[in-house]
View 1: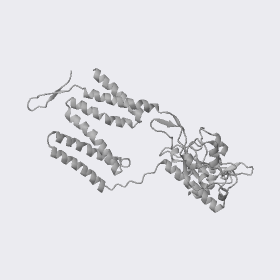
View 2: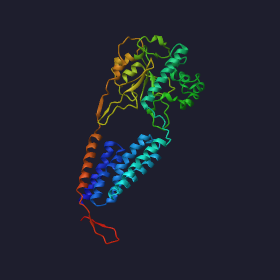
View 3: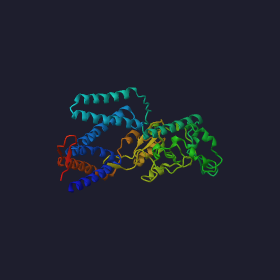
Amino acid sequence: MRRRLLAAVLLMVFLASSVVALGPGGVALAGYLLGIPGVIWLRRRAAMVEADLVLAAVIGLPLALVSCASLGVLSDHPGLCVLIVGVFCPTIFGAIRLWRSGKKGNAIAAIVALFGFHVFVFLLLPVSCAAREAGRRSQCANNLKQIALALLNYEHQHGCFPPAYLCDKHGKPMHSWRVLLLPYVESNATYKKYNFNEPWNGPNNRLLAEYMPLGYVCPAAYKAGANRPPMTSYVVVTGANTAFPGCESRRLKEITDDKRETVLVVEVANSDIHWMEPRDPSSEDVLASRGGSCQPLSSHHDAGSNYWHYFQPGRGNVVCADNSVHCLPGRIRPEDVKAIVSISGGERVKIDDLVSEMPLVAGLRWDHIIGLPLFGVSLVALLVLALTTRRGKRQLAPEGSSPTVDAPP
């Protein structure tokens, strides 16, 4: 009774620590690892068939998953993965039973047939796996490249960059540069529907919120399958010595600093700026908003954490006047921020030097620090408990009946 109670407690600790240490997927790993003490316990209880069945799963599951990964169907074709697992595990079980019964040749033939099946599927199955996305950060970098290319095309056609905003007759911002750029980001139809005679949030224009270009928001800003928010992830930095001074326009030749070191567009993780809204942070805002909810030079897709630590929010993509994209840490010295958004300051700050800066550690991940040792210790305790289980005894059965096993006291 005490052993059963101890086993139940260890099992609960093992499963709970697997979630704490490895996340929800840790339950699957814990269930798999439980098969090892399970095989030992069943064999010591003389339940040989059940032990071989669990042993076949312990051996077959990783082999089947490796096969699925080599075929490229691990996530794209779950039905085929189930089929491969369904072939591997029973075949290995049959091979184990044949080996134990002395039919080693048949067992070897079963294993050879199993791998022959894998080769057959690998060579003949017409599985067309589309190229996988390079990752959200790469998508975000591509968005910025497209925006910078659109800005350069606009400058080539009009002789200047679009202003940060267009003003009404009273000097109030009325339309954003993101709207002016619509024809250059494959959204000419939306541009034609936009009414420049009313504010950006007027009765006609507010109906266009759902037509935000895909490249105006970072793919990490919303969950896959969810509706894209109308808030943009990309802003320009406005100010007297920047590429976007306000309602005035700059020409490319006015950028006398190294174009690779001059930032045009900045990524913002938690922007509250509607994509049509004529509002962007000024250089003073960028210098002042260190650690706020809308922190420039930040992103959703790079939280900056490892297994043992998590880092302070930061690191956001920026695109420069030469159409190069860089991922900068969120906490940069004010003088360096001012230098990289300046177009003619003559500063000697190198963006590549800023990229190499490491993120600041915000704290330890105590759930993993505590959960992982508990996970390991409880697994070892379960193994010891299985190894010390009292062996079952086979009784001789009368002819024509099956043998029985004595239950331990």
